Length: 258
Image 1 (tube, rainbow, N blue to C red):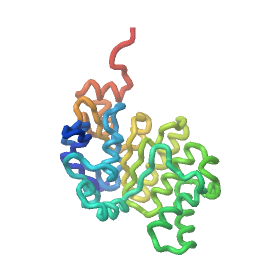
Image 2: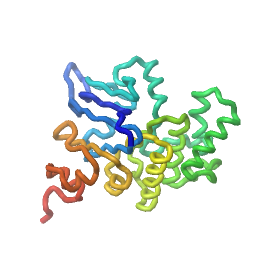
Image 3: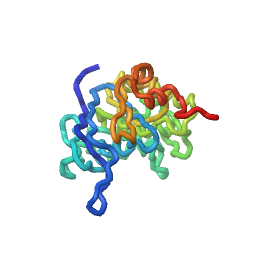
């Protein structure tokens, strides 16, 4: 794995400004995502995982700090330049966000129709290829409602890959899936990362998935309004000096039950 950083977050402070006052959720957060790795963002409920993701993909602007995607600053650039930067990555949202009125194939074709000048045959071939990569060749004409939860997640990943981005952001990919389907999705993520060299940024709190896919992780803590720990999953499980991090990775309750 290359040591080159493809995403850099520098002194990022995020929150909301209301009536002249700032409510800070995360303060002075800094980290790097290396090209080709599977990087996980962890934390308990309310720790800021989803908020951080929204800032990394340009949906929200920070109070201060920088986020660079392959060298380009998405946090402070103008809207036109931001759209160009956003072409460098794809996003799979938590529930898939497939368009119910379209077939699986049409969902994957959509980014190609909107953002390329390819003819219809080329678009069809690329979309079918992406669906084949995620094991959905037989589902091209099915509606999202006809797909299982795991198949919907796979179709959403195929759509996120439609424009061949170097980075994929996945928001809680295992949410709502049974253990077997979740493990199959984990295996797909690792295979895509290793065979295609895609960099993955995954927001999750599912411990089995973290150990199955993540090369490195950061763990957010709402009490610290920032990163409580960073390293490999095994390092955080076995060697963290933070009692809270230790409890999280070893599934231990904060207080013993009576």
